[in-house]
Amino acid sequence: MAFTENCAGPFEGGRMHGAEGGALKLRRIAEEIKECRKCGLAVSRTNTVPGEGNAENPDVMFIGEGPGADEDTSGRPFVGRAGQLLTKMISAMGYSREDVFIANIVKCRPPNNRVPDSGEMVLCMPWLFEQISAVRPKCIVALGATALKGLTGRESVSITRERGVWTEFRGIPMLPTFHPSYLLRAPLAKKEAWEDLKSVLRFLGRPIPDNSGRVKSNMR
Ligand code: URA
Image (tube, rainbow, N blue to C red):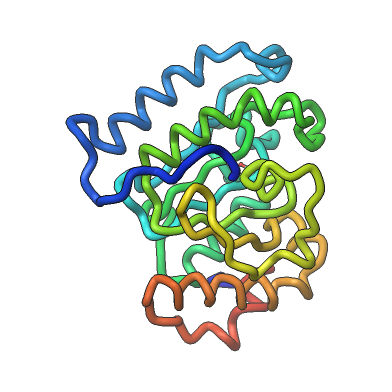
């Protein structure tokens, strides 16, 4: 489309951070991630991919699965083919990448782009939890089954059944939708993904851009 938990208790509310703002916290977390050797993915990575974007209470935090080859090379999330589609999805919503925060369940590329295993996810997700706590997004969009598994802590999820259904991650409203990689393989599902993103805009009280005619063509 020019496309347009879970762990313990809720995060503290309020817009203001303490002495250390979201961006500063994020930089500190990214520095720590760079040194992380908690799992085997550290051996084969080129770069860690901590995430990027608006770290100060953005409307949306998008959470994917893990870096692929392009992300591993650049150290930036969602910059390959799936990332280009995610960028279109974000812009169809009326945002730029800089307006939102983009992160992943695991911060290092699994070899051959395999799905991260549950051990890797468990070891890596404390970084993500710290990031969510620092960023304080108004809502979370979980991209695909791995993100949904990680954020709900459930072994088994059905993204087909659960997409479009609001839930919460530690008190933050969360909506699962299809991963952009899946949308590249199954373009007909873009229509449903756009419905999900409109639901996010409605939740945020934002105008729904009139992309209806362009959605499918622009999500190529
Ligand atoms: N897929 C993901 O889940 N994350 C990325 O950063 C890139 C592709």
